[in-house]
Length: 284
Image 1 (cartoon, one colour):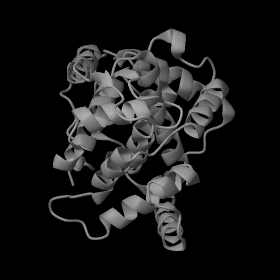
Image 2 (cartoon, helix red, strand yellow; image 1 turned 30 degrees about the vertical axis):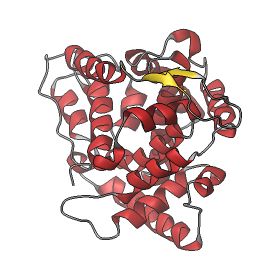
Image 3 (cartoon, rainbow, N blue to C red; image 1 turned 180 degrees about the horizontal axis):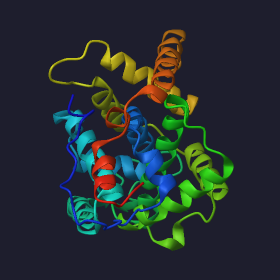
Image 4 (cartoon, rainbow, N blue to C red; image 1 turned 30 degrees about the horizontal axis):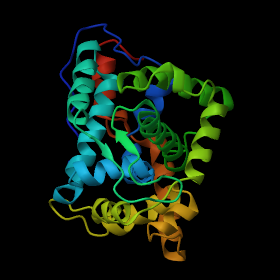
């Protein structure tokens, strides 16, 4: 259950808006339902050959996939809703963890020769990781929280995500200028993704959803939602094609979560990090 309830930061400095004060970005990120998109975001990331190589060589998802997902989520929420020092502290922690992640591709994959170098703080790789988080959060909230963003709101969401990107080594020079540019970047990059054996293994570890106590049906639901969120070809490459059973599971969950969202109290619908920011006077 810890993946559903990562602990919020302390109260912070009263009135400190933090580094990501954008209303639309916080509106999307603050929805607790975004946890459903965690596996899809990571599977998108590791289907990039160089990101996948770094994770395969330098990370051990099999030792605790749920714990690692929670760590990623905790850092993102703290940077989004924490005060300035809390946000910078979370980003520094991630930066230290990523500093030793560098090397070269061991085996050629289509479009990327063996020996191609990679490093976690490479601007282009950092941009792809950021893009998967922004795109997946938006898609999840629209599909599973009924949060239908207008074109203007989508634009604001993208623009307001840029301070978050800068905190994680994504410079302005590589950030798509508009949300239309961003969407085209995501679709163009997705067309070149390759699910390697390592990526498939990591994906299986992530979608195993080992929790304590065990949650019956959690793994099957995670696979159904992830298949619903990923591009169909990528879902098939990971072995989680949109079968009739998975479609039905995802549809039933969408119906339930979108119906429940308008009547849920804020303390259940939103991450506690958002509530801390509101008490700090940093968010409406």
